[in-house]
Image (cartoon, rainbow, N blue to C red; front, side, top):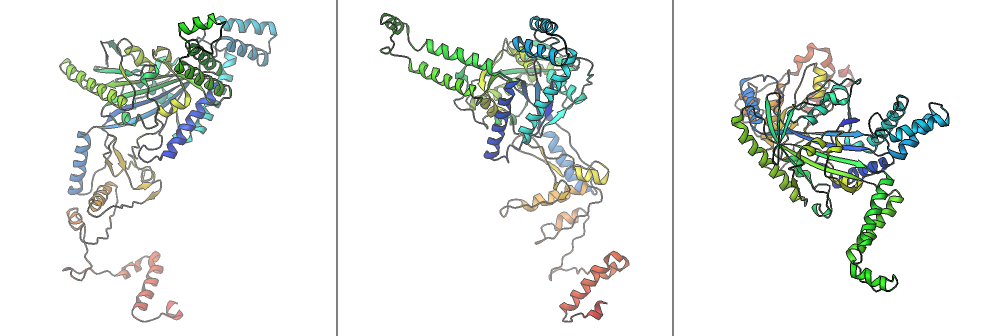
Length: 557
């Protein structure tokens, strides 16, 4: 098993052409993986956050502005979407496992054919998944798995995949198995043990159409929503933006996409059975009996055109599958709607109603995307379990779909959170420097705004007159003063910043002819520093030229 955390292109800034490229790249990598099928989890954890990064301000007025911003941030509902991608490579089974073990024994272990045959036969009849590989096989399989992961990462370079290892990987498994785990929690993971040691031990009590989760002195409810596998519950055309609203919903949710890639032989077997099903039902009983009376001639029988069309379409898919133009697999889609946490039973009913309202919102979003969602009842536990990587056997709803259809539903884009920490200034100053301010967005995810892009600090504000440009820039330079040693210089056109400057103990200099106070500047005071001599020389020359005197070479010397 391997896990990645990723951030895709921003939802608001990604053009349609880039979205199409993302979908095509993902579909291609899934199709190529059908040669050695993988099981893949795309998981999104939407969690509420209240972390506010700041530093002390240099004066009471700017501190008052910062305190007010902090109060507004903590009072509002701010969320963060964590995107995870998990791969598992199940061992080969059946004849494939027999052939792989026999080949490994001959080529790597250098045993005779009879011994290799006996070991391969034992592998064939043993449990299909428990201890599938001998010790000598593991290294080869791990290398093969890593090669596949590198290929997928290269094929989907826009996703910026970041490998999760050690405690970070254990923390992901803990958060997936526990609906009460804190965002960003970590769990110790000993490579000498099974991954199960990192799973949580919360108590889960199934209800009529919900789950009650207790652990660590806290409780919350979870409502599971799924999509039935029948084609009538899916839209005619799956659009890449269809589920965008789901990742901006006002509440904590878990969105799980599980895809078990089918091998070519598995897909061919399934499609052949589907084609045969439609072929056998093209003619009703009366037509079959009539054709039997005519010696098997069906030319005069009236077929069911819908069945005939479905059989022809299935045959087209079989032809494309044989040319490796399409790939298929089993797909499961689950959404967990989480209620607020509570500690006392007096708050249980209120929390339950909040979770129920959130589940209704989730179902409304899915209905708006032309899906037919169902609230899980008997399958609630299995739906929750299937959202944990490695637990695909627990899922009860599977739809057999093409890889390109799955790729259009996956959360390949994300809502940018900005940069809460200014990495460049933090590195240069040797202390933690936060962003200027968190700005609200329509997605419920605060955007931490900074004027720095890497080592470059710049900002351009463009807008119509009277749209708040000056107010925004004033807020930015006011909050930017939290950075120690910051000096702010403002070139003001119409005294719009006079009051903010004076309130923050600044010095406002008016050079206009109508100014009551006169400001004077004497650059010659810089003569004390040798680094300014060259600049002062040019300044004196320019001043002389303005007054009609052209400096000569002797003057310059």
